[in-house]
Each structure stands twice: as C-alpha cells, then as structure tokens.
Length: 246
Image 1 (tube, rainbow, N blue to C red):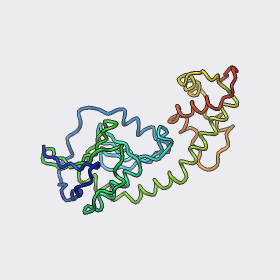
Image 2: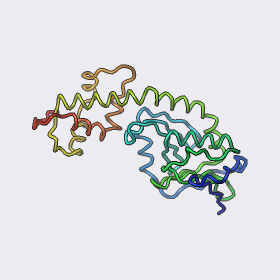
Image 3: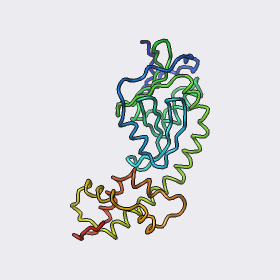
Image 4: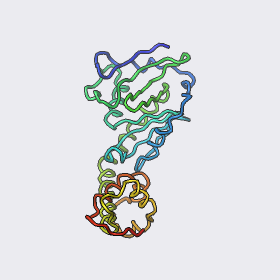
C-alpha cells in the first residue's frame, strides 16, 4: 500500500492535487462497524443531512456534548468522523485550492493527519482523528460532490451558528429552570436518576408551560441533550428535599 501522508502538525509540504484521485470502484469497506460514530451523527440537534453518494452522507448539526456548537459528521459505510466547523471549512479550502499550503489554523488537536492512500488501484482521501479513533475514506467523486455542495453547506452552518445555537441554549436553559422550580430535586440526586425522571416527562406538557419564540426545539433537546438537561435541572433545584412528582 502506497501512502502520501500530509501531517497537519508539520505544515511543511503542500497538499496533493485532486488530480491524484482516479476514477474507480468504491474503496474497500471496513470490516469493523463504528456504531458509536453513527450515534454521534444521529444525536445532533437540528441536524441537516446532505446525500453525497449511495453510502456517504454529511451531517451538520449542534452537538450537546460540545456546548451545543455546530459540528460536521461524515459517514461512509461503517465509518464516521466528526469534526469542528472550522476544520471542515479548512479542509474544503485545502481541497479547493490545491496549490496552497496547509493553513495555520489547521493546527488543531482534534485531527492529526489527512492522507491520500491507494487501495486496489483506487486513490482515496483518508481523514483520521486519532484522539477518538475515527476514520473515514472518500473516493474522488465523493470529494467532488462535497465541493459542489460546499456553498449550501456553508449556508446551513451560518444559520446554525447565528440562530439555532442561541435558540437551543436559551430553550435548554428555560427547560432546566422550569423543572428546577416546579419539580426541585435533592442536590445529592444522581445524574442517572435525573435522566430517568426526565425521560418520563411529557414533551407536550413542557411545550405548554415554556414559551418559545421562533423554532421550538424542546422535543429535540429532550431526546438528544438528555444529560445536559438533567444537569441543568439539578443545578437549578434549590436546596430542598422536596418530593418529585412526575
């Protein structure tokens, strides 16, 4: 297997040209499933999905595990890789301007290398995240499709950064404060117990009691930000031993 590695940490070598990609059959599928990565993609709040190929999708949404910041997930077969918006935008720039050096803001901890690898005579783009042991491999037509859709993807990212994230944070705060006031919990309640209480609360009742301007994300938050809402509920509860009636 031949490999030309672009180590983002060094920033010494120019990126390879997209002409290094050749037409051919799809890359060899991974034999190991990555269920955790697919769960990550499915748990993004207000998620938009772009169809890239028969088995390649790009998801853009808010990650409750990362302070509701917008992230990008690329899934292919049993592979998936999650990255920050900044890194995704940098990769797009890198692929679109093949003669440029790697931009300095690509020196991020989340990803360590991007490479061109050859499998069975087909060149593929491999994006690897060493911290989370994630990897996704794309062939030439996948990369072309992502570049073709880059403007639409950028519009989605801007909408989420400018409007959806602030709405998500505000509504999550309202849910937590409402629960803390109406159904206070003892401070020593375990988070797992709070999550269990929260799962049994009717979303319709929350919507009736919590005012929301614009898009309502209460149901989405209750499903995908359960842990964050549980922590907020507990922290919003006054020092009391009151009974909890669900």
